[in-house]
Image 1 (cartoon, rainbow, N blue to C red):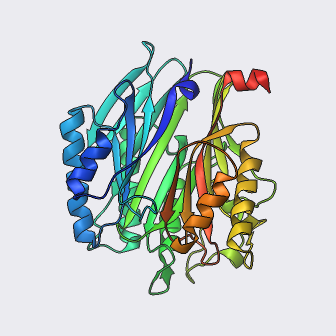
Image 2: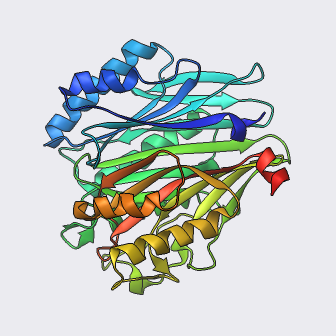
Length: 372
């Protein structure tokens, strides 16, 4: 078995209770037989000050449970639509050939996995001062922090294979600069330190109601030729990093495009894992502006099917611009009969006309390959 066969994804929901009680309830559901690599909490704090207080509670609880083997941690200020607090967990079934290293940098925990196929970094919770700094300042600080961790562990910047970008009030303006555009400018400045012959990371850029700029990432360096990453294009869409100025909501100064691929895969021998970027109802580079919610969701799932091919989704997140669409979203997603963990969030999408965005992870393991 290799990494693609041994990685696991779980989703847990808490019942309404005091915040520390909900955190305990979620942590108590984690599997004992698997090594926890990443924990991402999603909730709805009322203010940024309370967000920071709850974030401290999460870190204290996780430190109590895991000691010096803490997974990477993030707390996303994004309202879940089917629970007051949810937890997405990425875990792993290690074998004797796997070496796991749990590290801490400036109070940011992260994990390094190494085996004969690759070295892989699971990092996140990269965040700056969410109360006093501008989005531009936060974005620059976040990319400085993540670059320091990458350098510390000898991962080049272009080894990032998946990035989750959470942006407070993503479509809001600070003067003439849109929050998302400010983030994209900082990302481009970081990425231009290297070349990207094998494509940019898969990524999601999604709104949060609070929490400033928050970034999580996976990075990988391969050790042999039968283990590699592949950028995946969607023939129905123009690559986001090739967008024209006409579809970018940009400042008058800088017009950096979003630097990500529609999807990116890890292949080890005959097994493949696909990171599906945040995907919406876009054809070419234009949104389906006047389409109904149902048509947008179906177009989004068509885009995902184009990216994944015969691979099967193992976990999805559905982001809804309007929470009133939640019941319709569940009804429509149920029709795909996926029988996998699906979370539903109320979140601003990067274009105001888009009603839904979906991201996830898909897997094509060796047995699937032989049976196809």
